Length: 537
Ligand SMILES: [Fe+2]
Image 1 (cartoon, helix red, strand yellow):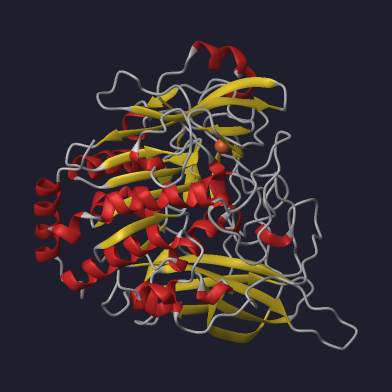
Image 2: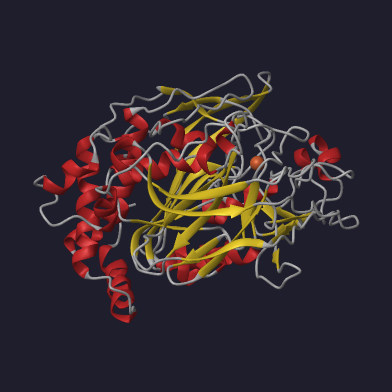
């Protein structure tokens, strides 16, 4: 299990020498120093202390410098009203022309207001920022809003709703905006003191292509798969069944309210970012890790992954194009450590296609599932799958475990391998549990035939509170001293941090408890092991 530092370091040096970015070896060392501090801080101290500690005597890395800037809690929505059905606010809603954009590139923002109202867009970069959670980057507008049309559905099986709205603005990303997840807070402007204002979000990712310690992949394919905007049009609401093949969804539409586990304004317009990804983003930036961000669509390109030392899949990462799978496999082979801090990942084969306007990777279509369909899956989910067949390789090859029947539920995360180094400093004993950490979907059926694979935690979940299933957290060595860790739960980041406004999920009669020093320490141990090569190379 011990990493092979020589082969990985040679690969890393080669990448650095071939890269034209401003990345320097000093940056690498700085990022590693922050990681080392994280393991000492226990996840409780702010990052600014790290820059002056003995463990990180150099100047701060770019994430630390960014988080020194003043933050604000004003990124939160204060006034939201659902106006149509259960998921949509027509008062003000919008979307962006791309999932991610690099500095110097442009992105269109589309907004509809009904009734017509002037509105503003306040752009925030999400991070730690002294515990406020975001920095205000720019105000756009005011603009004059009008009602833009809800598109008709295309025919079955695709049943696609794809907006073709007029943009209110085209934003060119300034050169000094760091990679990150950016929320645009849309706010109508009241026409009189008795006219209330209303709000929702748009969301986009600013990416870069520099070598970095950590690539944080947002699970935005899955956000879109579950998005029911405008009426009830997610990948789960096809008349042929909840897992019917051939159904499509478009990124060219607002994100509606999330449909389960959370029902507050936390999700409208922002997909599931604030629910699953944000606690990890907040925590990594608090500790000053050198992190860069991308969308699922960016990760069809292996080079986008291999410029990072560590790739993190976060939260609920169910929908993958086969090109993503192939890129991930290549990245593991080239020495990237994979941390699957998620559940139900790489479950559905969902190829991207272009929008009707020709923009790449704007439509997702469910075509099959990863791995062989087990008999119990055919039996238990016949109605849900309605003809869905295996269409991809076994996801255990890149995760170590897989989605298993029952696919959802909740349970405790129970240590079964206390001597493993991931538990160093936690004091965890065999059989000791972290209550409620597993849910609302998980991984199980570990690939025990794989050389070097170890089960770290395992136990029961209960779907609906009564139907028992099994999960397994695993780790196995990659071919170049890298690691592949599977936390086996969507809820992992819930026990890392509690950013402003965060609400813990509740599902299947079970819930996690929030920040836990054991989960923080395990995550730090993994990152320290994944990143330590540069400190000695
Ligand atoms: Fe799922």
